[in-house]
Length: 425
Ligand code: EPZ
Image (cartoon, rainbow, N blue to C red; front, side, top):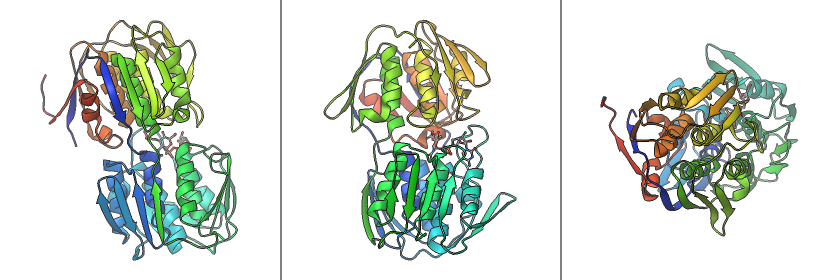
């Protein structure tokens, strides 16, 4: 969808927001619903273009899917296909997680490489070499992956880096292995724990999620009826924290465990925001001008500073007094929003994986373009504090990860609207 968001900056925010379920949990959990040959009821599932794309993949392979508000029911008893066409795979990055699910359920899979946001090279070598080392025959040529299981041996895979997606694919594959699959140097993100919780509820044996060694095995008996509730989205929470930090004002985020966000709230607190845990979630308040937090912001795997929050926080720091250095260690193309921010008057020098942000007094509204999901949201965050009107083009990226970004910001008092994309300048 080519719509744009118009933000008229300068309104401070106030109120409370309910935080949606986590996209990066919902997608692998939905892929996992293909495993049990029964019914999975997934609550708090965010209504996003990415979740819709994953549901289309499930429908294609023969699952019955019903969606009622934020509850999705997947019946995988009639699953009949092990192939997924390229046009479905290309709609999102997490489509690749269906590979582990199909191999575990049907013993084979024929899929293409995934799509998703352009954050630079996003290889899947660790997914494929991990499966291969477990005895799966994997052929990847011309963008098509053909994989066939040889028995259900299982074993140990040591990941060269703690890839979220590779950990998830190997966990799903582990569900068919009697001895299980042990992933060493596994990702430790909360979304991995959520996938582990779904798999446990479905009767598989799961150990170690949240640590660097995760083991998933077939378990004592698959449950044909599973109910699971998706955890809150920590990056969406970070977005609302940054919205308040940018616009000024105060808000309470309901349904957000504060410990998911420690690294992000730490930086915002040191920049001058007041952030505190409440009974229901997190309170944030920003009065007066922020200052540079006085540390290099280094992105890394959980529990380090999340790469997904980096664009949002850099938007906030673009107007904080002083200089901040950001080191992006996860993706090579995660500074594209900064080039757009410079068009709004930000003072940013880019050098490889480093961005040096010299805070300016104020940004000016301009027409800017989203190049990826979080970069797009970061431009909206910047627009909240900018003088005049900011138009953020290519909202389709933002729709991948935010259920109601415009409505939520409006409920906090921001002057934001969504319009059809047409030339206005
Ligand atoms: C997940 O992507 C998230 N997506 C991303 O969120 C997030 O930015 C990322 O993890 C890091 O936290 C989903 O969960 C759907 P990775 P994923 O495999 O699984 C390299 C958002 O905005 N790598 O942990 O694709 C890779 O290039 C999205 O919501 C390999 O080299 O991330 C990257 O540098 C964007 N080979 C690093 O590992 C591989 O086989 C981490 O990637 C796999 C990854």
